[in-house]
Length: 410
Image (cartoon, rainbow, N blue to C red):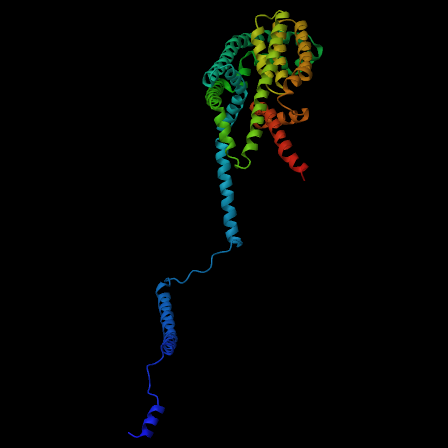
């Protein structure tokens, strides 16, 4: 080999192994190229699979359309009709059980009135169960004594009134104007035969069967109310907490305070009404003993005490009953004395006794008392009149503590 060839050989470089970095870059380029080439194929395969799945899953009757809008007239009419039917069904159910609701309300009302006496016995060391039994037995004994003392007097006085009717008609016949009217229409003979014949009482109470059914219904209702009152009184605190738990937790403490005040006012009203009725009964007994009607003084005193519990008209009803029996049992002078006594006593009770007793328990204006008693009597009769005043007091307290305070803060 010549020197020129060797020099030429040294001038040419033989190919060596490839650079690792260059080989890695080329591999990445090939991978990206392969992925780009395969991507359209995969996309086409997915599209074909979706199309095939849509053709398979499509229901035989077609794809459902969008749901009806709630503002559509048809949907609104259906919902309104269902709401009216639901309200009517609820109203019918409430009306059908209205008697049970009244019994529950009356029992809770009586339990709230009895609870202060139970609490007073508890403060003296008696357990609540024994205190409830003692109070209930005392109330039942008072009612039994009232019935035992009243029934003989009622039968005797009805017989006396029936016996005195002819005498009263004879006195009326002496009146010239009544004589002229009776000569023309024979009114007195018809009235006398109607009253003394017994048809007056039967038509008044709907006959013997009507009287029996009324008495039976009264006894059943009284038994149910007594049992419910016993349960409510025994678990009075639990009943209150159960009612308070219906309020939201954030307002439960305030609702409990308002509820306790309402129940305290109801208990104060019942206690105050009992005190006022006892004053009326005791004063009537003393007066009847003074005018010589000692045979009927205790029974008539019970009548006055019972009717005096009814707001507004109760005292008048008791006074009218006593005055009529006084006229029938004694002479005209004694009857007039009884009328004068009860007129004076009612004024004393309305303006002195009742306001002083009720001032600490029930704060209700006189106009509100009258309106509440009229509304309660028109809705539920005597029961509504009894519940009207404490209900009005509770509503007034809620309005003052909630509505008026909210308006003052604005």
